[in-house]
Amino acid sequence: MNSLTFTLKPKRNTAKKIVVEMDADRLERLAANLGMFNPDFLASVKRAERDYEVGRVRKIHSLRELIR
Image (cartoon, rainbow, N blue to C red; front, side, top):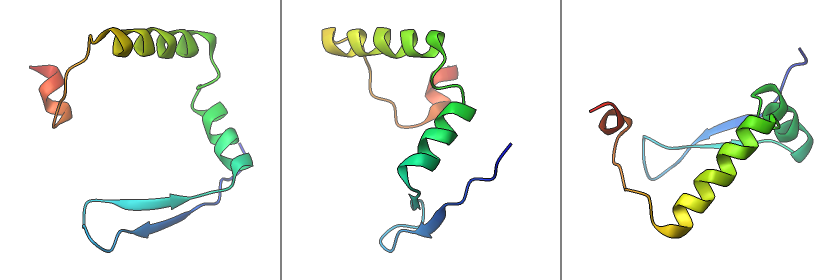
C-alpha cells in the first residue's frame, strides 16, 4: 500500500479539534483504501440520505449514546 502524506494541525480555539489537509488525489486514494467506493457502502449512504430527508434521524452528543 502506498503512503499517504497529509498535514495535521491543532485548532487554535479548541483542544478537541484538528485540521487535516490533503490534496484531492490523496483523499480519493484514502477513500478507496477505506472501502468507500464499495457498492454496499454507496447503497447504505443512499439509504441514510433518504432517512435524513424524511426525518428519521436523531441528534446524538456522543457515540456512547448509540450503544444504550
